[in-house]
Length: 362
Image (cartoon, rainbow, N blue to C red; front, side, top):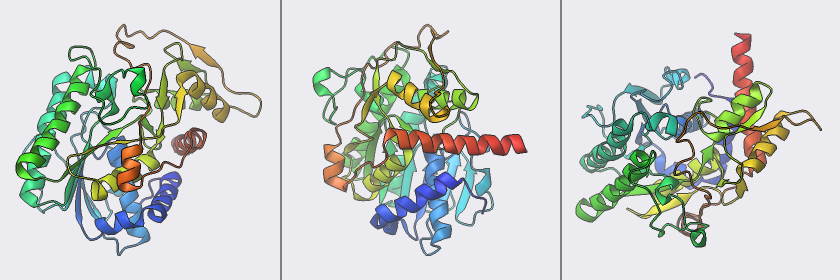
């Protein structure tokens, strides 16, 4: 097996130690991961592969599927010869002969970045709605133990300040016609499908709402804030903000998020939505300065600059605040994020710096 990265291997060891009961439920099972070359899907594939090789008795057999419309075809190339992983090219909306039955389905397939979903609104809706319907039908046909739907914190839109931190019962303040609507509204409908399949057919789907997840494996040209900062830092700066820096987000390191999501998959209640993230709310300007310190030299942080985006719609429907209420996921599955923002950004930068040096050396 070719190693994904030192950082991801370390993350796998920590996860194995902190949620052992979750991996016991995945042991000796067939698992389908859709959108497996995307950020979250590829991280899951790498974590399960690393743990399989560290403890072969785990024997979690993974089918990693993607259509590569908005993902990197080479992201999982290091797993081509992995005996625990089968790489498949497939579109989640198409009927596919998988050649086996799945015990667990992890449905990550989606266009999560505005630079991908805004030019392709119909494909975005297709994956989030018809793809989710297809995966729910597959879970029903296979008698799966559970199907995990990756929804989005974007379904809350721009929350009323009295609902920050935002609980799952908040209904959202979302535009159905704006430039982000194809993504936000189709994720909302995806959740409705999960709830309806449970109510009518008892398909045990679980729903997670990610809050600004970042970490190793996210594409540097993803168009979102953390990859943009990482790319700028690798070039020696400056760190550029395309807003006034006042909007806040609650960034969650991917190890925490995936640990929480897998816990929801095996321990969460069917057809229930769960916020999964980190409640450490920080302004975009704070995050930029923190990244500038991490990537710079002692006493000489990188420069932080403000610029205006060339995209006139860049800030339309962009929430001013984003922070999850984690009470429900803490109570139901015992989730607790452990990686603070500085540590997570430093680990992520180390991952990209390692990859950058490998590319230069080659």
